[in-house]
Figure 1 (cartoon, rainbow, N blue to C red):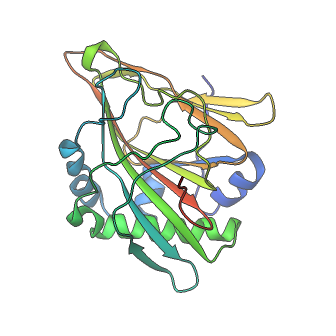
Figure 2: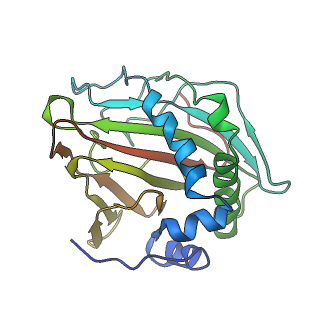
Figure 3: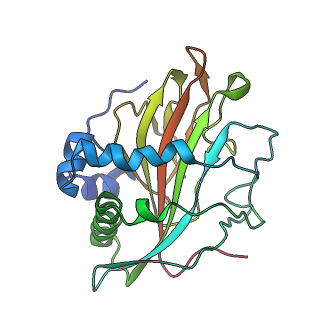
Length: 243
């Protein structure tokens, strides 16, 4: 496993330009959002109420999730939630779960309205627009819990992949009673890559989806039951993916 040097907010855009990824630690992220650990805890509490993923095609029962979509207007810095819609990916990006509409329950209204949630989507949208100026970001939000039901959980059952968007943000919220879950980021068109474990709650990984592929290794319990909570946000220009 590689030791990585985390980035400040000011360093993150240059790291994305130079290598296609950046990692921002929680003691940088939360002050940038003007939020406290108590605010983070209030948002994370909603992960205890995620419905099961009914679309897993590997026969597993280890993933729980919700899904909602937002549009961030970069000129006015306004964020609006869209009418509820399906999540869709082409098979070229997700061979396991691509090519059909997946409907999930939306995020709770009180979570979407929380100041931390609002600040996170707005400020990441503004930051990413400094790298790739666009009129608007079409944002899909995926709160995930992967648990160890059956002895193993797979954060990325589709394997190493791209998402078909411009940027991906992965926030680690909690690792509870598990081993594994190593993050792996590789050049999409080259031999180089890094491997590390996002361990601190509210650590942020930013990815340039055109330049890198990514995956997380399976998790196993170290006690009776374990889980790994993440929030994945995707930022795409031009519109949401659809059939």
